[in-house]
Amino acid sequence: DQQVKQNSPSLSVQEGRISILNCDYTNSMFDYFLWYKKYPAEGPTFLISISSIKDKNEDGRFTVFLNKSAKHLSLHIVPSQPGDSAVYFCAALGPSGGSYIPTFGRGTSLIVHP
Amino acid sequence: DTGVSQDPRHKITKRGQNVTFRCDPISEHNRLYWYRQTLGQGPEFLTYFQNEAQLEKSRLLSDRFSAERPKGSFSTLEIQRTEQGDSAMYLCASSLSSNEKLFFGSGTQLSVL
Image 1 (cartoon, each protein chain N blue to C red):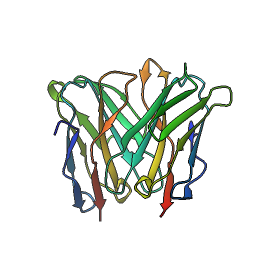
Image 2 (spheres, each protein chain N blue to C red):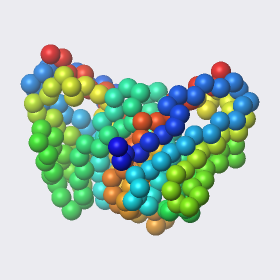
Image 3 (cartoon, chains in turn purple, orange):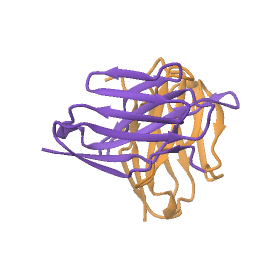
Image 4 (cartoon, rainbow over the protein chains, first blue to last red):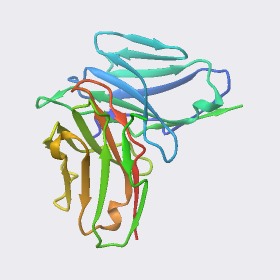
């Protein structure tokens, strides 16, 4: 039973265009969401986060949008660059028996073509 | 470098052998997590520590797996009698508190032959 779903395993985008990565969750107790970027043979690195009290958070080229009623969040990268090519993981946290343990989606592999 | 460090980066072992991995978290972080990742999957939670106390273990963590965090600093993850299905990247992460972002190490890639 996947509580965090990334339904697109891969995404291909032209350099300079917008990349939109999507994430859906099922647990309404989740109240903090994070995006991580992962290169091969390395650990995930934190990219951007959003609390459930907000619907948008922006950091440079990266913006995360949260739609709580739809239990959906998305990561926008504008403009996309070849160096953005990586696997992107969505993660969610919320009180679960008193613990906050991040639950990750399966990831979306982004390829940005020059 | 004050990030999370993991050792070794790679481990190749024969089925049935025991292996141990080490993780050194960011020094002021109270929480330490172990995750496992296989190809095409996201990181799957194994266990976590609040200081030296192991507070939760996933059902993925069979009795062949044991983790420790003596003195609330570094942690070790031991797998006894390894099986081919244990082949994965084992990721360690740490965080300052319960609802803070996790900082990951580079992982230990385990291959069981």
